[in-house]
Length: 87
Image 1 (tube, rainbow, N blue to C red):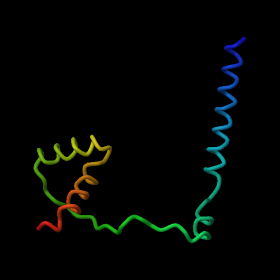
Image 2 (cartoon, rainbow, N blue to C red):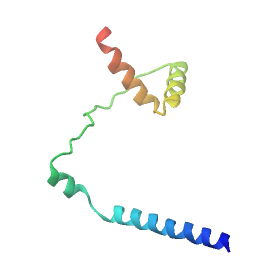
Image 3 (cartoon, rainbow, N blue to C red):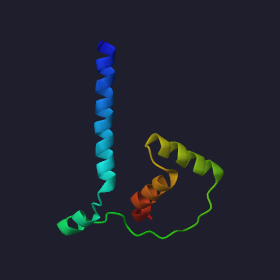
């Protein structure tokens, strides 16, 4: 009997969570955010560019970036931004 009540509790909780997800996905929050006039776009404009890097450099970037939970291109942008003033 205990197992049934536990499994029913889980399915009730799962349905409640699904209902919350469905409601969130159904609503368009863009209008609310614009009306509040409090949101700002934090992403800077960026320009696509191409550079040629040695394989070992890309491998090192990927390794270090993965340790931080980042992509290697994001990691590269962070490094450039931090050290650009030194040159």
